[in-house]
Image (cartoon, rainbow, N blue to C red):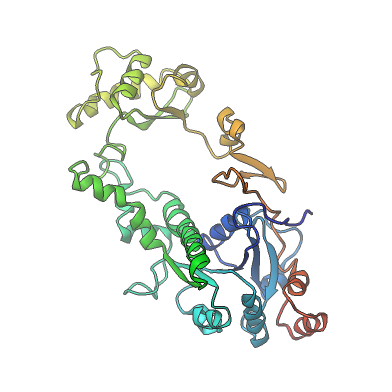
Length: 385
């Protein structure tokens, strides 16, 4: 098994501690690793003891080294704090109050290392009536006003997997916050807490709807607006082989190209208003069912009609455009998305494979200043695994 390598990206040289969790925290840590940071994942001692065979193929865990620490042990907490002494960033995604009860909250860590960026992400945030309660992505979107808008006319709201809460409004927002705090630290010399909440992030991603509503361009009914499948020229359609295509011909010239290439007679040559949408949708639905998805690709790709085939995650890596851009790569035996965005001087890259829990405990402790006898004592006492 190959080992993580020194980063080449824009965050090369930074040391990051990730307290292992689910969803947004690992996604943030993956991005930081892709950008060149040396990310050390702190695994529970129980996870190390239970590990058998190769690690699970969890793409979100790529590019790290792993250390096992018992954070319920005083020796384990002190070990973590000694790592904090040398760290630039800590990432955690526990419920409010958990790290404070462990003795590794922001106050304890910043007292040890005033330059530390302490990045944390929760669902409901750390204040407000919902803060102490359990929740998942769908709940945060619902409360933020983001879920309501996703769905078709007359149908229930549709959860967009976990893209908007866990990853876009959670992990990616936390990554942006950490990078902003690192930039500020370069001038002030001081660390700070970056507190991301998925309910806040989902609301932030909804900003454009508030703007469109203020301009009179978004109504109060789901599935009847320009971008929510209300407009037939911004929607998906089934093809003759049971697959799907997507059209987004919003502007008049793209719309005209679409209609002309489809060979539709008797339909407006400029995008109609809502009163004309039902009839146009019926025509689009009918015509797209006359050819297979690949046949539509042959006809519409390059027609400047804002068209694309709807590909499954398993099909997408083989598409010629994605292949040409190397949007997907094979690493550690898994096809997976490549690091993004792209940097002209300091390229991001996958630093290494998914680690086994506790795989690098001794190596990391030695590298971060622990003497051999200290490591042996910690192992014997169960502080590390």
